[in-house]
Image 1 (cartoon, rainbow, N blue to C red):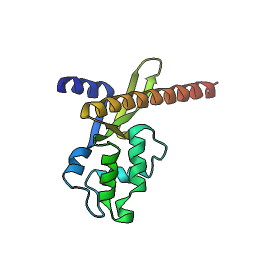
Image 2 (cartoon, rainbow, N blue to C red):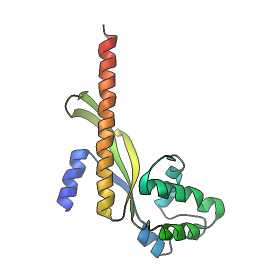
Image 3 (cartoon, rainbow, N blue to C red):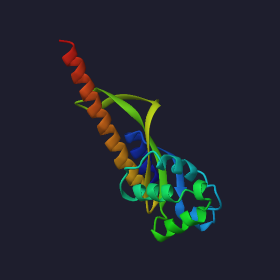
Image 4 (tube, rainbow, N blue to C red):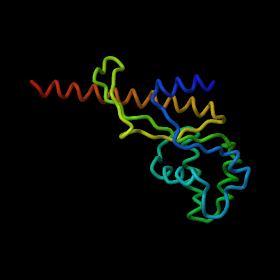
Length: 160
């Protein structure tokens, strides 16, 4: 399993930057007062920037925005809402580098970790969250490929 995840991470240039096990955080009483446990304070900051995200991660973003403990001083209400909605899974902040496809017809590309995309993904288990992360990384690479194709066409059209 770990070797498989290693190969997937290598093949997709995908890394996990932060991990939050919501069941463990809620169960251990980590939601207390005005401050959220790390990395959920980061998650809350990002929730304000990603308002149109769908699925479970969108529901979590919305839940965090509407129950911001820094605003109302009640992280326990947020924990209660997470339990009530059965969102006691795993949240991952994942990253993949921005890829520049020098042969967009293929998957030949260059990249650097100096510029990269990030996203939060959710799953009921770590494996579910990892699966979401892989789908996101594939989508990011495809979007980078489309952008490279457009840039190549623009350069080709401008060279005439």
